[in-house]
Image: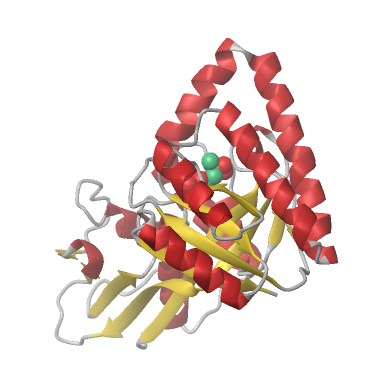
Length: 314
Ligand code: PMV
């Protein structure tokens, strides 16, 4: 076993969250500069593997089958790797995990941590996992953590490419024109499974209406893909606004998200929407240039965002 550092990016959903759970297409992009990292270091004297999760201040001994500890997310990844790929030594190594991706804000932190760990374990065994293997393994981990995920988060993070995604179909890699996006974090954590469950319970009460909304969101995702490839800024922005109106009909926006979306528009953004499950977490705004993105980011901070990220898509 050799020392190895691996990482995985954050992501945002540009179009189609929630509808994607019901089989509609959605568009997601990686946030390449915001990453989770996992390092495996060899420590010969260590009688057992140690897991150190720096962001949650937890250091624990790795014990197969222990589902109770704060590091179970990491335990699950190691166990899956051992079951599906190859066993790892039973002593003499330490896994250290750190992440710059805020937790529970719709930026894919759980999938990124899983993928960084899987990559580090593979590298420590002098192996590289294929993209398909990474997508499949990380999907299993997402199911353990979130119940019934569509698979969009772990797929875009495994591939680290903009994708058009549809459940149970191979992802399509998009070749976008250049765009700048600003992400604003409300600072409010949310539980994806709870928000997905909330939508599901409303869906049961009025499935005809919800199916109509999901289909409309699906059409928006397909149009969004074409506009991204074409480089059509104006129509892309308007499409983001349309998607946000439909997300509001699903009742997954919040006062804080709406405030940041208005602030972005007042600062010149032509389109903005929540991204991820909603009811907290982050929003994303389209900017016409890097300079405009910086102006929007500043306005978001002045309007209550706890963090902003500017990303260039290309
Ligand atoms: O975990 P989040 O906030 O990135 O939400 C994922 C997007 C949903 O469509 C709401 C859920 C899913 O599994 O696709």
